[in-house]
Length: 247
Image (cartoon, rainbow, N blue to C red; front, top):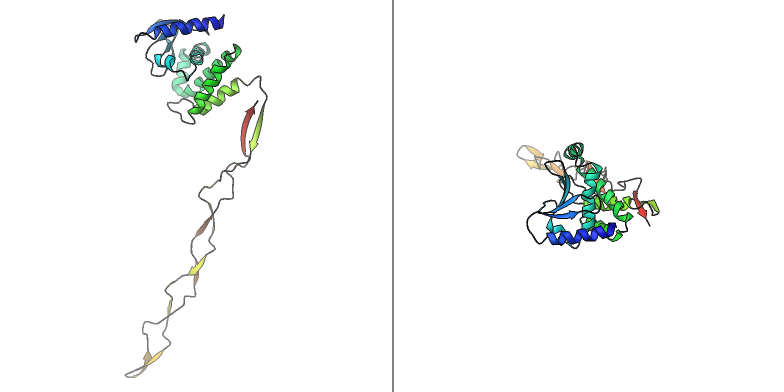
């Protein structure tokens, strides 16, 4: 029955896309809420009208984009309503920095719901779409990588998972370690000046040949640098990197 409602719903959606105005496109198959198709800067949103009635608003572009799962999008917005994110407390949480938390919760609910009715392909497509977004995040939303990993964890109840730890290969100090300088150089590269040891004849007797002194090799060694930089020998994460692997 759920799958039948899904196909009927999709038919209504594509019919609604023929108009640029906001159009009622039927009821979603997950929580029975009205769906309105219209321009939406966030692709899809869970909304409440002026009378407090809940509905789902979705952009026509979301229906035309064949690389994303429409069913996951609708289930995700349904989750926002069912979990309570659109209530006054939910909105307060969102405006107080809870956007990422709520998005991950809605993703998890949608993934488990789709998994329960056999829509694994839609889940896989959504995970791939988020993973392709990488670590970029904006507006308080979780990154694509975070969302992809979260969905995987939410549907892994029936899979065998284990935590694998890999040795860290990241240097704690990318620019190198500081060690005491081992390079000794003369303090005066041009030499030391000492009293002239050479007598030259003068009008009243012998006088120093070099009144300003003789220059001899400097005998005062000093360290060339306060510190030397060598390749870092310390890993950034002593405990290694942990990763959950599910089969």
